[in-house]
Length: 228
Image 1 (cartoon, rainbow, N blue to C red):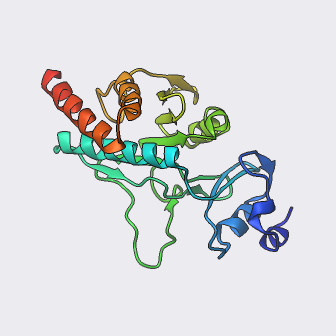
Image 2 (cartoon, rainbow, N blue to C red):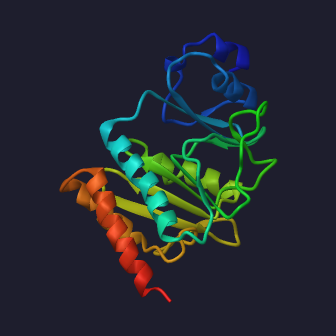
């Protein structure tokens, strides 16, 4: 498959949610396609994933909840700098690319767009995020497998997979050997128990994501009072 052939092919004909062989030029042809149809891409050393279409209700509900979570944490920790850049495209040219649902930088050295620059994060020019996450409604298996390997290869210290249907969060920390291992407490949001995120997700069965966020805010405040 070449960049030319991809440019002439309607994106909906390309296999979705499955890896298939492609070049970086193939990826760029899809990335830069002016078609108004929504498309999400990931690329890892000659493999390409394509997801098309708008978010479903479940994905959108949980995605907004977890973006709110990052802001709530920042409010509880005003002495730290956090930058949330969810769904922004991360690229290491010729090798890897993805647009995670959650992207968090901790510290003052976060990416800032300048006029004339591409509207994506160039990981050859800036450091990797401290945390990325995928909201998994229909993509759980690939998020726990291929995407996990992609983010580990990028060197991202913490990775979350938020299982919408299972109402749970799989959290991983990158080890010295370049592999992720499960963790029970966040490193980027230091001291945040992953079990608290699971409980927040389970509250969606009782109400809206804004009610779940309000409950979580109360729990975070209590958590802050008990930490040294």
